[in-house]
Length: 160
Image (cartoon, rainbow, N blue to C red; front, side, top):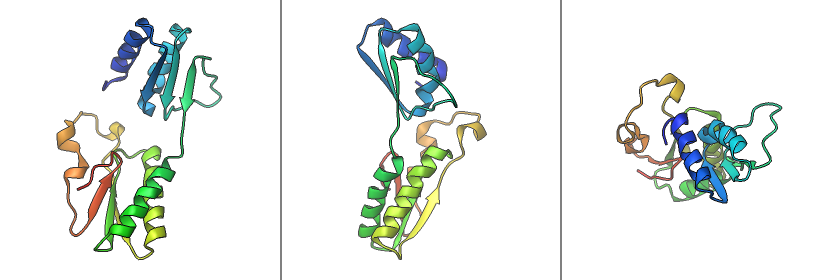
């Protein structure tokens, strides 16, 4: 679902169907999960990359799951650094937000760990707040862009 109202509607349909556990993937599900979890206390919810509010107490049936994003992307950076034939690699982030910056930092650290001489180019499209008009995915996908003598890996793992 693209909009928060759509996410909330989808979560409500799942909760009404009485699924035991409903999982939302991505911080964009945080607000919808908060609302729906309160209305369905007998259903368990989990949100990966949950975005907590300062001092917030979550409902007992909602688990906010976080992981160290930079650790997985460190390993991808190591692979890129080891297999680069040109000494030039790149990272394309999905959005200009702190979460993606953590992925980027891990990727660069891993690449430099494996190959201290490697050059890393980075690109990140504007965040949604700076891009008010939705752009179709096939048109905004930065993984379709090529840089001279570089291979890029986006946060969704697609190589170009």
